[in-house]
Image (tube, rainbow, N blue to C red; front, side, top):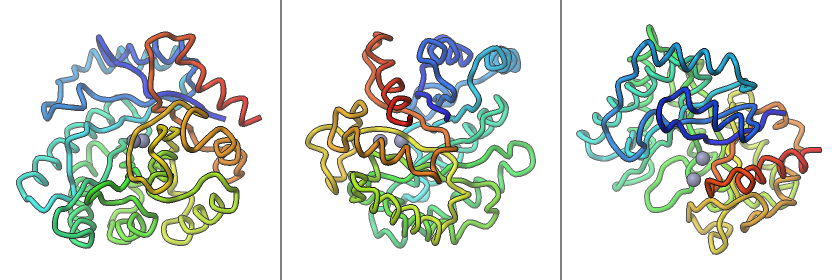
Length: 283
Ligand SMILES: [Zn+2]
Ligand SMILES: [Zn+2]
């Protein structure tokens, strides 16, 4: 099975593999530059080569790029949607150039209605696919949201509605985040709820389009249906280790890459505990 972390690229994208090695990652996720700013850093061909060489010399099988936090493809404001499209395009381009297996993002929010949000997210994402189709066709990965406020894409039904509107379906895939599922109301603590969830996903989207899993516990106080997106280390939060064990023993999920976005201390001995626990629970 494939396990890994969101790793640091401080000092250059290729440094991801140093962090990855220490954390024994089979798969990693990275940001292209700071997730808090609109500006996308220039990445030279030389830096791309360095990244690819470091990847080849590592045990990492797959790389997922996570978008910056700012884009909002579903916004009711056209200017923000256009800004978002530009940002997503720039990052998708770099994700393609480094050879990433996917470019992961959220659908954003809409202040008028969820219905309008779904419609506009579809429009932005179809345009994003068109703009990158020819030269930078990296797989575009839609992540489920925690659902606070007017966030779009927290339920499988809403993800299904977005999927229905996507024109070029082979360009897209999905990522499910365990913390977001739980705080938006899916109780992962029973095998029955996990089966129901996956059956619904299969009916409305198709399980073959599920490409990545984010493995996060939900911080204490961020309970079932709370819509509060605060990640906790595995087994240290509201979801709990047994739920992760059930999740990891679900046959339909076992071939997928599991990526941790849990809090890090900077101390490897501490930080590596999550991946060790996942490997243990998966046995
Ligand atoms: Zn996530
Ligand atoms: Zn989250």
